[in-house]
Length: 61
Image 1: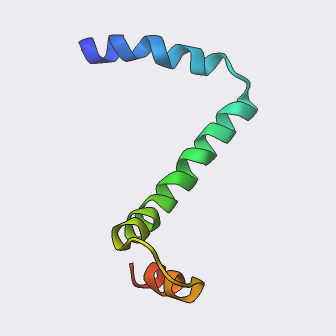
Image 2: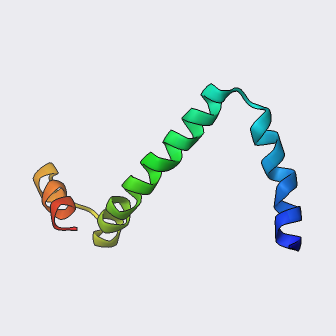
């Protein structure tokens, strides 16, 4: 329960924003969660020499 009380101080200011800002934050989190596996896949392979190689890498993962 201590964890919940400690994080409440950081969460409450979020609700003071307008609904439009809530939507942007939630949309951004969704986009980032979709992009994360691709980002990990590309960074694990290092430098990719061409756009075609990058697309193949993303298609495989």
